[in-house]
Every structure is written in C-alpha cells, then in structure tokens.
Length: 136
Image (tube, rainbow, N blue to C red; front, side, top):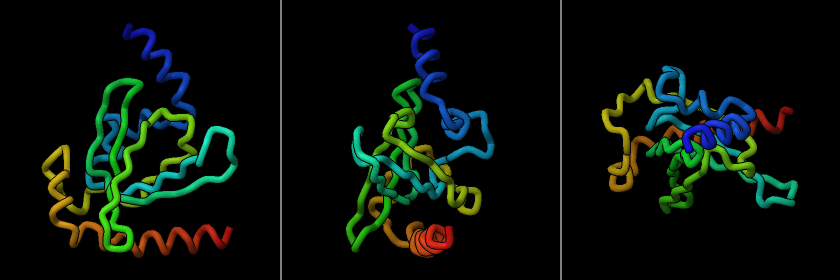
C-alpha cells in the first residue's frame, strides 16, 4: 500500500510541492507562513482564482496531504482547505515565512479568535502582488 501512495506522490509532484511542505525542509511552509495559492476554477475551465492567507494547519497524510489557509475578507473570516496534490492547483507561492513571528504550535486554530495582528501584513502583500501582476 505504501508503494502505491509513493508512486502517486511522485506522479502528482510536478512542481516540487512535496519538498515545499516537507518536514525536513527548513525553508518550507510552516504554520504561520503567508501563502498565495492559484487554483483552476474547474476541470475543463481555463480561468483561475487566487487566495492568499495565513497557513493555520498542515495535515501530512501521504497523497491526502492538505493545508488550511485563513484570511479576513470584508471583515469576515474565510478559511480554505487545499489538497496539496490536486490537479486543480495551479501554483503555490510562499509570500512570507513564519520565521518573523515564532509560532510554537503546529495548528494555529486560536487565530480564529484573535483576528488582529497576524492578518494585517496580508493587505500590503496582496496589493504588492497585484502590482507585480499588472507589470507583467
């Protein structure tokens, strides 16, 4: 069974996603990192949508590995959970690593109750990303 999942991971790991979320990678995504995810809207569609948020949880379960992002949109908390090896994921970009703020937990669910300071840098990073996209 483990051999089958390892083969599936190798097949689905087209752009180095496994290394980005590996425990052994010190430069990888950790809870508290700000991540920008671009997804396809549907299997047959060419349009895509983006979501930027703070990574509050990573669940590492082989081919079923997923991560949860949280952001505040129009004063309402929004959480998105993404499967790491989904073919609908177009790109994953780490905007800011969690080294600045030392989070001592693996799951940052307590941020749901404290929406203040963690989500403030997201607005400036989002504006900067939009400016970079318009230049291209």
